[in-house]
Image (cartoon, helix red, strand yellow):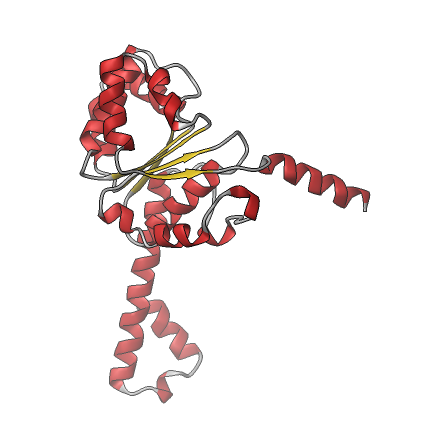
Length: 234
């Protein structure tokens, strides 16, 4: 409010405004400032590895990515319905980019989001068991409206990690949403999790009624390298 008022003084705008118009201007400035600060705070707390947005997603015909579906996801109705999104595809295809774009969109619409690489999250939870921060970290994850688990299935899941994953999934089932990315097709996840009974329980909660995105096409990393080489030659 103070900055908006000072700006109005410097621009001689006050002379053109009635009292109610001035109050409206100041209130709107305060509202916009608080909204922007809240979005910035949610983005910081989400701990995204990348910067991304829906507008920057490549919807090339060979990617098997439906623009209309992504626009619906951008409305975040799936979060309000506590639904999950599973994104699969080969390495470098842009899975993390799509997941992060949806996470950024959720932050701008007021949802609490937390991004985690699966390997690093498991390591953090194991360390939490040792230093006593495990329960606090699990509680923090549980409070998020959207949890993004990136690179699921890259490393084998041992008993301790399997137990932690089950706890996370159970806490969120029918209560909050997840986006999970993986290089492996969903039908291979059972083998990755191991321990048939726990794998059945986890996948039943994750996969049932989840939205699926199966990205295809050439690695975007390779494509960018080729483009740079062409630009260099030209």
